[in-house]
Length: 84
Length: 143
Image: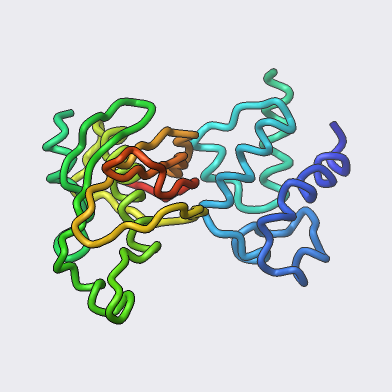
């Protein structure tokens, strides 16, 4: 899957949990889920569960801990898809 | 893990403990009982001259029995003495009032426990087994 395509899917998944709409307008690789979009840690779990369903992958605790930006998410999704 | 052990690990005390007894605990859910004492402090103001258990207290009771007790059980293999708990979401519909002195039963069903977040479907019934309220409650539970 292309990076652009993954980011497009992520944007759709993240949207309902975003608190900072202004930061969401600039959604891109450098966007930080908590610092920029002001998503809380509980909703970040929901996002990760949605990512698992959308991309048909399993995310482990280590990956979850390292998923702070869109770039991290793209990297993790790509590597899990390659493993599958 | 014994039910009494779970009750001892609950991070609440009077006047904010809303669990008398756990009747069932397993990997998928819990059930438990609480009786609201007639002299509970909130009846003095909710409402003036017309005491009814506040919805937020019913929600708290559901969260303590249905989510926190289950969380302690699920974390049984880890050190739970110093665990931290925080409510993250509650979406509850209320159907019947609970008056001073009434006994309620709470039944919860685990939806998922991933990355420290425990989400449950929870229902509360009165002594006549009628549905008092139900909803989905989730919390972050970390040991």
